[in-house]
Amino acid sequence: MPVQRMVRALLTILMGAALAVITVPALPAQAGIWHEYPTTLNTTCSETRVHNGTAYQVCLEFNGNRTQVRAVAFINPGAYTNFQVNLRLWFGGGGPDISDSCPTMTTNASRACYTAFTDLRRPYVVTEAKFGIAGTWQLPVRALDMRLSAKQQERDNWCGPGAVQTTLATIGISAPPQSELADKLQTGDTLFGATLPGRIPAAINSYIPASDWQYKWEEIAVSNGQTYEAGIQRIVTSLSRGRPVMVLVIPGKLPWWNSSTPFLRHYLTITGYGGVVHADGSVHPTTFKVADPADASEHSIDVDKLLLDNANLAWNGIDSAAIVRT
Image 1 (tube, helix red, strand yellow):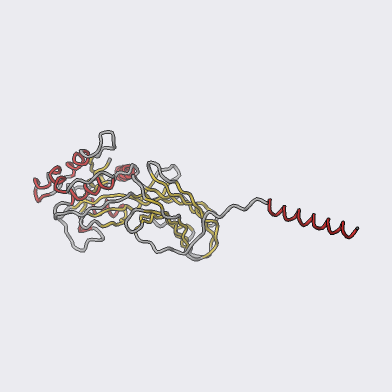
Image 2 (cartoon, rainbow, N blue to C red):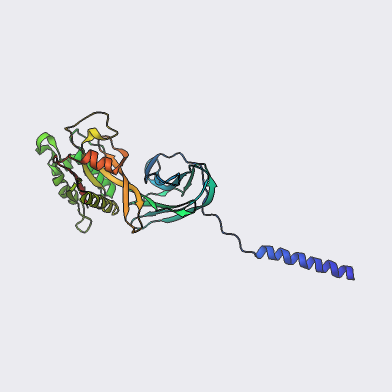
């Protein structure tokens, strides 16, 4: 009997231990893991920033036909260090709001943390990443872009109609024919068949409800630092409404043009930006994403390169940049 009681007592202990194991709460699943750098195609990115020798940035990556998007946080340590990131992807006007994070890791290898692809929605998509590097949280970096519908100009002097068509289609308005837009813009009535920036707002607004954001045009005085920065913020405001901005440039100065054209003027459509979010919540962009109606191509360009080198002097020969915005 003592032996039987010992056996029963032992079985009771073992069964209790098993039950204890079963009732222990499960550990929370890891939100994300660090990967090697993915092969990316079409991206809109923040600038590459550096802290303590470690470079980092965040990008929106689009699939081939620009119908899906994901957020990708990149980090490239200069030496063994620890880092982590909190990552967010969200849409203006509603839609998914996706948060992800990759935990602290120590390595000197390049790594990426990314969300799954999700359907791209209008009016715009934003990603923001906050990196912790060597125990210090950095200012968030951000990228914004839209569901671009780029159009190629149908005649040599129809960059204005092509850029307006791109703007309307990107907003989600059924894009009118470029011939109709050329008539509204009176493109063929001016010297050399140019589209004047002052005629663009009325043409765009004729397709937009009066209750929606209305377009206007202005010249940004780029020689004055305060007015220049204020002009950049007005571009950011328009983009943050999901409304592209048109800018007049000297195309021969663009990095992707292969010929010098000092007397030619050309319109680009700005659809996105990449920058840093300061402590007061303001966004300071360092890059713009633009669509070129010459061939319906997309490009990333430094903000100062676009406005100071390419747009400056394009309109009236003085230190200003002509833009069309909401």
